[in-house]
Length: 63
Length: 237
Image (cartoon, one colour):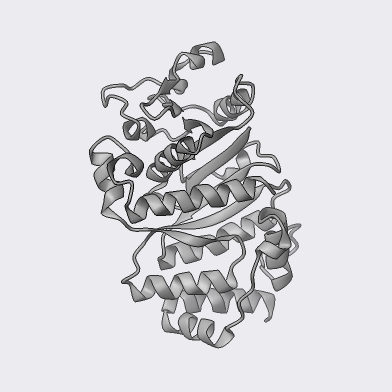
């Protein structure tokens, strides 16, 4: 049986993304968020591998 | 001393050529540069004019005093340390990185480490002032690898500056445009520019040189100057 309890989560939530930008990217204002979800979704849906990765991440994070 | 670690997220991303070209551009800006080859392929020296028959480097040295005898200086003034033809242990690699800190160098010295793509960068003893530039190509495999790397970074204990830089960007490719646009708007830690795919980089290597000397007005050289300036701004943070 798989051990479902792990110390480190393998998911990437939006909060994780912000933390990564702060920890490894220097000042927080260096990270410019350009929100164009519709265009991004179109790109992701266009390519099978990108769609698979996105679905997998969404399934894990529940977003 | 500012330390920059350059590595490909996978093999063949063009890391060694970037390291050599960046070193020369930084040197042109009066920054002292030491380029260290950590990759067992040991081909960084070829970009600086080291003879092909030379197989010796730091990995062949018994101790750091011997390593000091392995440094070379190219015509542009860049000091470089070839890898050599022995496969070092992780302890020996970390020992070299640590010993390089003790080099008696001017304060404005930058050390560029050309790292092999297969290593886990978190195994190096990095500190918060170090900058890791992980080179990616605009393809779907790199898309997958970037997400995996972000998951790894999330779980690492210590911190450093870490960025992904797109190399060999082909502006005529729809796929590359789509991926670059997507990454810029969704991923953290992406450098806000790319290094164009340019024959000049390959040609200058064939002439045993770098873009700065072979084609100073090329797009490639503009890109390396952009990279150098951006790194200087990041080093100041």
